[in-house]
Image (cartoon, rainbow, N blue to C red; front, top):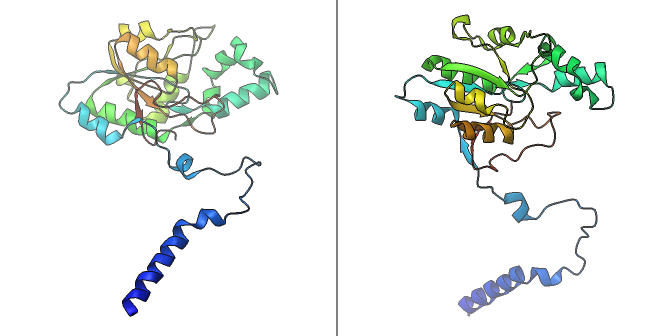
Length: 238
């Protein structure tokens, strides 16, 4: 008799558990647009993440090579400099981005407002320790007076020895503008945050690695990391 009661009780509990939805007579309204389903919360994306340690391992026993970096949102969190430029030249609009004065000032002093990214410091050190030759190829327009102070700023912020430093290359904003510079310098590995960086590196014959853009970057819209099936460096948003 006791055994029967236990079985019957277990069956009752089981029925109770699996019948719960039938008792939800007043489902919560989703009209507010707030909340997410468990599927949405746990959804995973097919992104090829790579760590600093994995990059080191992949490069082990390979001879020194030429390595390239984008600047804005890749090695610097540049938003403070861009916000300063907006306040100075076109408050409440993005017209400052179309002014050569902004780009001239950015590369000749205003970069002091930019914040060096910790992930970039680690990456640059990794390549310097390997004896790699480092290039900075940015999509910024060339300063109209031909001068820039970014190169010296990089020396200070990333502890790059002068003898290992190559002058910053301002490739310009045209589509594919970086391709020839990457190809001519035989750059084998190129780090950048934008889709254009990934595409230009591939066209030039270099392997691209995506550096993640900080969530609070003023450079919007945000790119979709891994959308081009490139490797994405973990923890590279800061």
